[in-house]
Length: 337
Ligand code: BGC
Image (tube, rainbow, N blue to C red; front, side, top):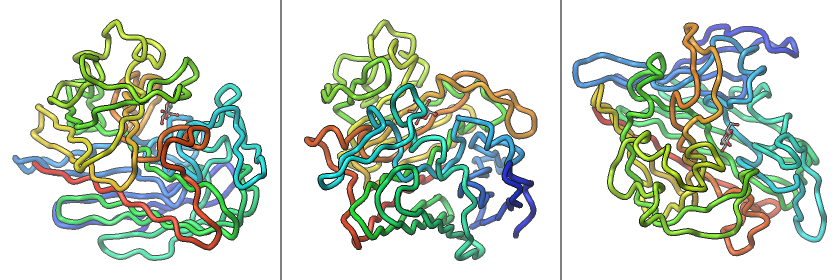
């Protein structure tokens, strides 16, 4: 199914595409290759839309929240908005102080994507990104596919460039498993993450390079706990980022399990990425779908990606793909109820 979503600020017509499988249903837009709605059942047969979003392309374009967005070429921050690839320096666009966040103001979340394939249970969007688009080297072709199974949303990325470049794509969905319209429940969601280490960051959210053990800190989710339990703890990384907004190591799968005591829904995250950004929506202040007010901490993002600013931390896995080689990545959000 396809319907008109609305007009973008550039005058393009954006559409909403529906995919479904069993009791799972999703709505996606070609504006930003965005996940707009995700319907998941519960054990009583009640279905809820478990992601934050907006009702119009204009609202997506006006917001810096990245609700459900396909973020690229590079998710998260790059210090001083500059990278060296090969022996050349490339200047990115600074949009977070002097740093680049989610590849700057001309992000893929604000582009019209082509629909390459739309079937009952899947949709693929493609985007051409020319040499020096957002400042990155190489003419690049990018594809993101969203596929539903009876219990999962599978998001896969593929990209290729004619020069060595950075690919580090993620999906920026904000999850509230009670339902997007019950923001006050979000911090009651229980998170479990096996990560033993996280990467502390400075006041601009640029990692210091340290890999810090979570043991004995509020960052320890190795035993399940409510997101809100320790979020107000007197701990410098929580002060600096105003809550959880940190990268955790991924060394096994699932790398996170989120569960909701209200509805009984839970969601396990599987990925081939080395890192997971846990973001508790500390800066959210939006009027979203169906007029729902999404204040601070109305949902949680579990963004799979390379470590933030990895390009300036050679000790970490590098987000560089060689000319002509294929970048591939896949993340699965598996639900149970
Ligand atoms: C970042 C946050 C940022 C948010 C929305 C997240 O991925 O970690 O610091 O505020 O995106 O832009």
